Image 1 (cartoon, chains in turn cyan, red):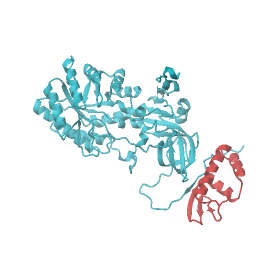
Image 2: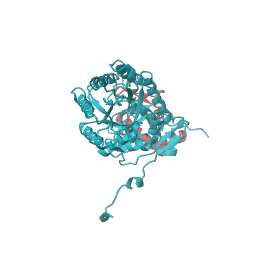
Image 3: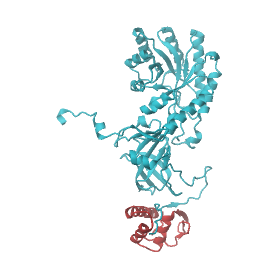
Image 4: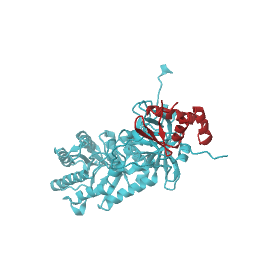
Length: 449
Length: 79
């Protein structure tokens, strides 16, 4: 029998003669047919569609790249894993096994870090919401408490009066680093003297151990220079403390905010071309600290709470096309089984999405929608996309940061999260939700039963 | 379904519409359908031929064919 020809959906595209841009056009979209050597088809058959996939190998490699960038430039460096970026226990344990401390921003995250086996004195407690119970617990455990506001400072002072242990504290400092928008909601302001005032109050109280200074200047910082400005300002505060109180702080914490290679909506160039390298961030921060007036014989430890840049590249979503249809103006729309409910970052990124099997060089202007019955459920509003059919598989790249913490149960149930270990074995690290697991928290009043 | 007169399709899938002056490109299956439409073959004949010669089932092809015709209409290539 004659072998049948490979089929591709018929397509006609208009040729627009015009001025070409300087980037030219990629003739053919790349394909992601496997993740860490495991075929996408196999992952979907085994774990369902869609699924979140994490590469342990990529997490470890990215962490070590970042660590190398800083430790080759500065004597004492300590990373603390930003729990809010991805607090799947397996992910946290990978970072802890590499030597990362935990950086948490709520009582819930604090308890998660403790249950992950992180010693209390290796937890950095940030965030504006710390209850008195949280603060008491953190004090007892010797955790590093980063004070966000004066109300918290007074809570700590009252805890210190009755507590056997002295709270170990740092203040969070916000400042003008030359960027817009300037973040001023976390901590005490540098320029108006509030930060210096808070430090004075802490030192005068003699009830708290002031051990560090912290800042978190922004998010998705596309240039390293502001980190240099911030590091100089924190170093200046440290020097003033030493001069006035003869008190040396133990560390300077530069927070997080390093960009990942994802492309922000509205950006002219792709994120992978514009994202600074770890070396560039490290250069800016280390230079500022080394060139400051800090005592070169007792340089404070440099803490980093980088989240996004360490985990984004390790995450993928594998899924299937649900349908293709035409919009009123003739444009193609493609519906996939990943919606904004589980890909929260699609609100600010133009996520990279690729077919999972070989495609021809033909593509169409396409809008990619998620499966939700909501108009806002758009994964890519305009993309030249190959002619995938219903049931074909796709892979969305760089989704490791924030999605597995900010996702929401809405309309559909959340899928499994799979970890691919360095030997290429797969592990379920979070089961998919079921109707039962979801409704188990609901209570029906007697009169409605 | 009739194509407009004078529509020219090259062997490589380049389509020129002299009525509007616009040019289009077709993939292999699109080019084949245009050829059949020019020969005024029916939808059933086209579908049968594709199912026989390509790795595609009838439902998928018909769905794709109808979509393709909608696009041809949008581009005003059909009468």
